[in-house]
Length: 114
Length: 111
Image (tube, rainbow over all chains, first blue to last red; front, side, top):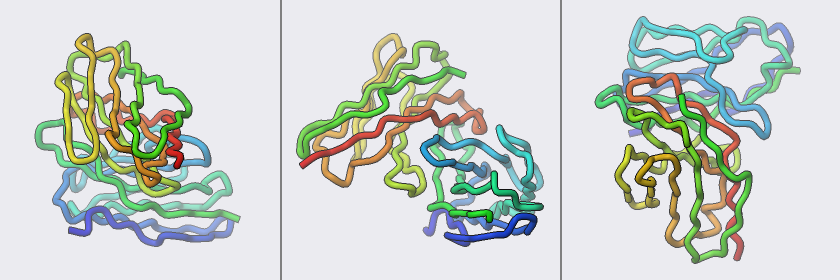
C-alpha cells in the first residue's frame, strides 16, 4: 500500500497562475480532505469529500476548488494563485466504518507563490 | 466541539518516558481523543486514539482520566527521533470534517 500520495512535492508559481495539486489514496477510503499549514501554525481544513461526487467547504475554502470523480483521487485546484496561498498543503483520507477511524496524511506539497 | 489545551513545549531525556498532557474539559460523551505528531514539516503521523479506556499500541500508550476531561500520551522510551510537535485532537463520532489541529506540544528529546 502506498497510502496517501501527493504530487508535486514542491512547486513555485507566479501570482495569477493556476495549478492543480494531486492527491491519491489506495486504501478505498470514503472520506478525503485538504488542509493547509502556514508557518508555526496547525492545519486548517480547506475542502473535504465524503465520497465520489460529494464535496463541501471547510474552514478556509476561498481561492480553491475541488472535485471527486473517483474514490481514489481528490485534486485541489488553485484558480488564480495569490501570495497568501503560499503554504504547505496536506491531503488526508479516512475510512468511514465505525465513525472513529483516524485520518492518514500524505507528505505534503510545498507551494510558493511569487 | 471540545477544545484542547496543551503545553507549548516539553523536554525529555533520551531513554526516559515522555508524558504529554492534554486538557479537554468540555469533551462530550461521543467525542474521541486522537493523538498525532508532526516531525519537521512532514505530514502528521497518527499515533493512537481512544474513547474512555486506556489504549496501548506499538508506538505509545494513551491514558484517559475517568471523567474524560484530560488525557496523557506516554512514549515509554523516548528517542531523538521522537522530537516532534504532538497534537491532541477531539472529534465527534462520524464528524470527519471536525478535526481541528491546535498549536500542539513541541517535544524536545535530549541526549
